Image 1 (tube, rainbow, N blue to C red):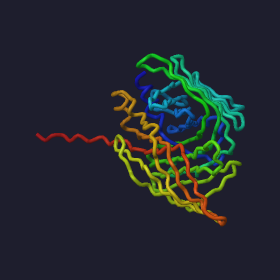
Image 2 (image 1 turned 135 degrees about the horizontal axis):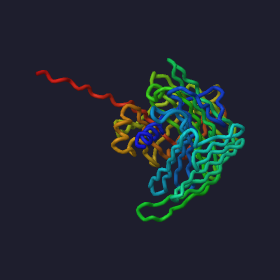
Image 3 (image 1 turned 60 degrees about the horizontal axis):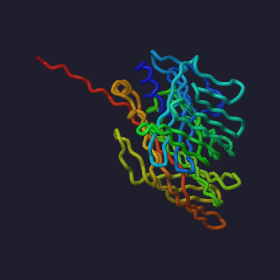
Image 4 (image 1 turned 120 degrees about the vertical axis):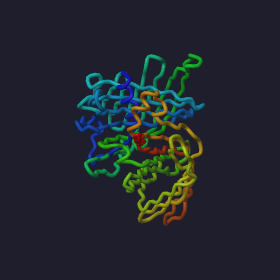
Length: 362
């Protein structure tokens, strides 16, 4: 049981991939040893709470086997307390509907019907989340990465969502049930990959502008992947109140005010942005201002699990509310864009190399 739990936890937060024509409603169920596929959701509630959930299908090392279904979720309350909800199930104990988007792992369920999405996370111990959201945009696809028989495919199957949600957690210190919820904004990604994480990714920045009440200014959407071979895949757009999208190219990002995290990971606090298209430019800064959560699944493993996971990459997740200050320049003049954004920076840490033991000469 320890080995099974270890495999589940060490692989949960391994990162992404991207298919040119990804089928979002059902897993591919590939036989490849490094096949992993997940749907991940990030939700910020109006009360300041933050919820993530990930539905992962993965082929795990012996003795666990292929096509295991795993769900891991985090609930961060407005005062910063984190609760982790997780379950893993064998290939005969989870499932999906082949005709529609309906995936379940134990009592946890992910359903979609067109642009409407329903996520149900629940356990009998009082820890659960229920979220119903709508995504007005079509999925956004990242570039397919395929090199030396390893590949990564990813998309934002919910590039922007809004709706309603509730959450409940059991405070272990007081044994009281704490609840919250309300209006929700966020996004969802769909990722497929086959290969070691450290061979596919170096880091991944994601910034999603939050639509403020009564503010009709366009909000930014930024995704920037830096790969281990030095290549990059960056998307930057503005989304207005009518859901019209302005795309930019010639994007330059400069990471400033670099901080050190645990296990030698690093993350920026300031991102300088310069981007253009045929008729406009976007210049300014994005600053991480309010910490939501610093999360690394390896820090929640026991001694046995950490020793087993030392041969695999570790993913450090830095989640912040960001302030953006951008100048949008068109032929009509300059518009100042300011506001809040839900942001995450993932830093990929290669596995530690085992020190070779030299034999003492007699």
